[in-house]
Length: 217
Image 1 (cartoon, one colour):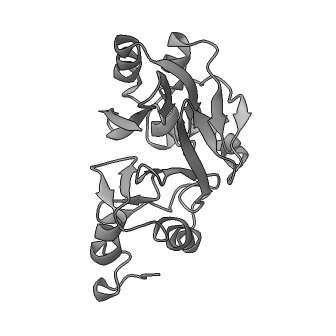
Image 2 (image 1 turned 90 degrees about the horizontal axis):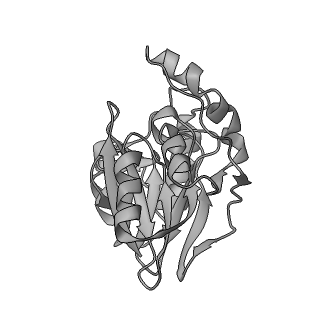
């Protein structure tokens, strides 16, 4: 599986294009402000877009869904149902930051943690990771040694929990049970900032490592 990153907007959100390396199948993950460049890459490379996959429904991760749908009008949109309220309230989310936002196309399919998502010969395992958002999930490919982790964990930090539906204790449990159980070599592609690895965050993330006062699993 090949991962390409498209960063944009005032939030610096990372949209991802995950492409199968043995076919032309691909998926768009969290299309935010970088969605325009993402669909240009799909077109330029002659890829077949199978789905929009959303780790969660905060404004910056969904504001480009309409752009992807304009490019591929029938592409399914996958979201965990616990985040449907956030998704439909995108305009209220924007108002919290003094911004405006357009309503986005309705999700078509419900993500079910534990059920894999397959595109071409590529496959994501779906893990449920609430805490930053009530319906947050991460997409893991253990054979490829990578995970798209949304806003659960970042290089040297973790997701904020002061937004509606956030809970720090729940987030820490998600990290402990669903992220730190992956091999240390697993590359983590977060919703903001550069990629990192499980091993680096296990020993160096101040929110997780005991010698910095954190809570290592």
